Amino acid sequence: MRANTPSGRRQLQFSVALSDLLGSATSNMTATTFQPTNEYSDITSQNARVLRSRGVRTMASVDATNLSQWFGRRRFDLIVFQFPNVGSRNPRYGRNPNHILVRCFLKSAAAHLSGEGQVAITVVNSSHYDGAFDMDGAVERNNYALPVAYPFRFSDYVGYSHVKTKDDGVGTVDESDEFVTYVFRLKERIGHKWITP
Ligand SMILES: C[S@@+](CC[C@H](N)C(=O)[O-])C[C@H]1O[C@@H](n2cnc3c(N)ncnc32)[C@H](O)[C@@H]1O
Image (cartoon, rainbow, N blue to C red; front, side, top):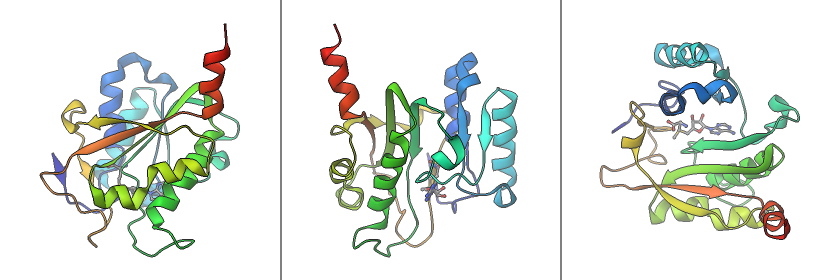
């Protein structure tokens, strides 16, 4: 189930759905938005309240490419970015801006992973998005192993629907689209796992 609503209108929906699944394990969970609170819709504010009532920490105005600014030295077992999209086609450093977003997010997240920590990024599974995000290329500049891909099903997350970034075609999805979650782990951590007796 998806809706073509502009970004910002219905944020934190995935976090609410995930906290439903986690039950009492939400006390270590933090949910963030790029949007500041003064841009929250009523639905987003309601989602934030629901999350806080479940013990989830909520934070606004968090730039996923500079997590240390908000999280200091804090580390996480799992860092999730659902459908990253800058909502622009303008190249950055001569590359697709969404590739740069993912690359910078991975670099930033690396400093905040616990020993066995993982990063999960969900995108539309299509050749257009494959080319745009270039996940394999994004790990080359970082110290991650090649990601493992899993199918993502909205039906697993009750109440969650994809928020389209902008009505400019960049975030367009079709009913027939499939979705994929890429899971990344740092190379050195994988190496440690093998050599630890
Ligand atoms: C397609 S929307 C997905 C929204 C939401 N994650 C979901 O799954 O419904 C893309 C999101 O990427 C966010 N975004 C873009 N650049 C970002 C950045 N540097 N840091 C954090 N979020 C960013 C936008 O604010 C927007 O909410």
